[in-house]
Length: 215
Length: 215
DNA sequence: AATTTAAATCTTGTATACAATAATATTGAC
DNA sequence: GTCAATATTATTGTATACAAGATTTAAATT
Image (cartoon, rainbow over all chains, first blue to last red; front, side):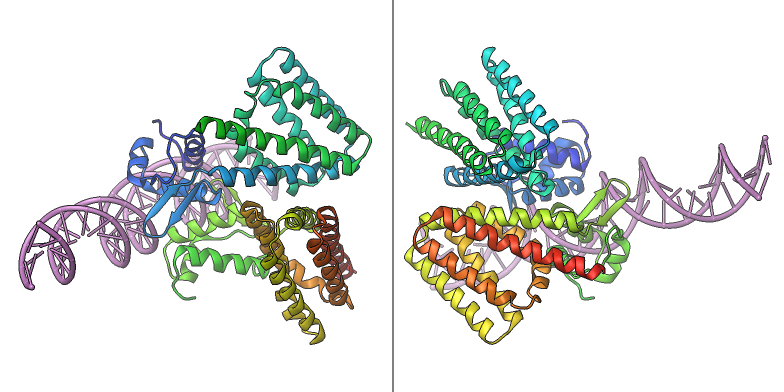
């Protein structure tokens, strides 16, 4: 592993935890990681602290830090919370989005449409992310926006999976269309409700997939 | 200043920043803090990182960390977000709270009532906090609960102020009563709307007070 | 005198050394 | 042979030493 500084190490470790490189409960050995990254324990410890702060690991004093992969229950809770955050963004966005913002949203959605036509799930995943981020931005509340971005990023690896469902992309796109209409109409309640449902479905699909894998 | 370990130092620093001990933009000098706490720079740096992570300070690489007191705009944004988080908690709580939870909520509210009768603002502040936390808990979503607790804690020093408004405590209590009724009735939409309003008023009162102080 | 350049100083970031505590192994008693 | 007590080892947490970059001060040149 190449030499990096603390911040980059934290990012890399996040990626590794996201990718399931470490399993739940595994202790992150400071010394081994220091050797792997060819640095001393100091920047490793800083990176580990960041992992702990972002909820991806747990620290037990004098024992070490242990990766904490969210279980099915916590994931469902996180999806539920994401749905509520997005609903909140939509509520504000409906009342506050500028014409430019609505244009950007329409553009983002048309790129989603392109991805569906190309049946490019990887691209849809990215464009969909951008679409939602445009709504966060539209809330005109940078704190809420950053919180939404944070959780979106945290759920990233789990959202990816649910697009595998047959017809999910097309359905998702149809929901997008409704959401855009509500936002254009300035319908706060409608936008909030639609976004809540849109994201909740993601969580449910994910749960279905997880349950399916267990059988 | 007494000797403490990193975690305690972080807590103490948070308190100090909360109390406005350091003004916005002030650099937190590692060496000076190390001397003040009678420890080396290492635990100080850990504590500073935690401050940065919790958004109470900003880190500029190779320059240092600087306290970041939220301005009026950001505070309004945070109150708005709090309102939405509480609304979300209420939405779930209305559908999920157990009888025991409802009992605890009623108890918490009656303690709020006691505080109002005693005209004890400090106590009302505490009991009110407990009342809201009971609703977070009632959401039966520990992730959402922890997020709500996090923001509630972050807004703590600013909520305190708005209780100074004449009649605010009594009005707040009346709103509580409505909220309890909606939760008991299982009225998700009602509970969400009431809580949103209840918290939004707090933010608005705070804004009024800030505007008043400027004149 | 003002501006630019270079030197010195200060500060952060990293590495290493040490201290304290937890985990493990070893020895002894029953 | 098993359990307990103690010694050993390993690991985290803190202190100190060093390296690299940023800021300030001083000097030199125009």
